[in-house]
Image 1 (spheres, rainbow, N blue to C red):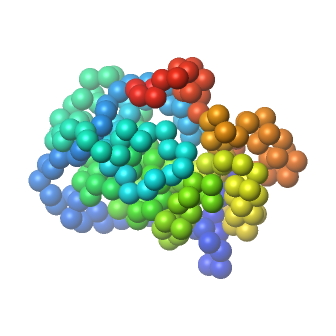
Image 2: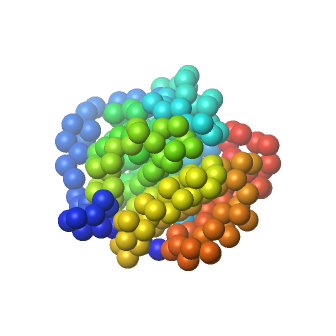
Image 3: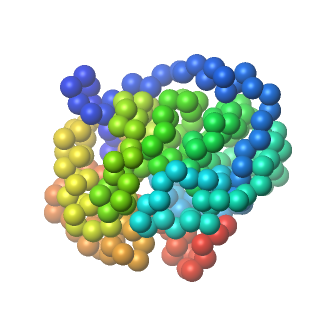
Length: 241
């Protein structure tokens, strides 16, 4: 299902080429990363595909269900050229830059640009609190819309909904029925005849996927049910998976 809204709505798929300005003008700066690894993509419409993950360190939010709290602090600082070569060593064409929160670091858009220039398909998974307009439009942005259960609902940059491009995806992570109703009403208000994919994901171990599937079917809601498949393949493993 694709997604977007015009002049009077909340969501618009009107992103075009953007001037990355100061990001492109810097010398090759460093990015603080927690880990780099290859695994299967566990979420998004790319789920199941081999993918190199660059997990950046640091995050400005504290969602109630966060499963990567170890990325809040620490990490190593790596030059962008070094990271690009590290990615190349895995021999995989799909790359995800995630966190933590990748846009918490101002040099990450340049890393994304360099990876795209090398021909990689690049996904940027962001919590939606920073301006996604700084990210090269060639990348696929996967943007969280924080539901009430996250405790971070008021931290979103709502203008990001107007910065989405046709390849981008919107993700709702749901804790319970209250979150579902909240997200459902947003989708209905935004009009599902637009241009960005919408994903509904249950918090693993908290919301039964079967219940969520039933709600979606009952409402005939044009969204994609998303499960974190890595949590089923590698049970109990919280890093490098």
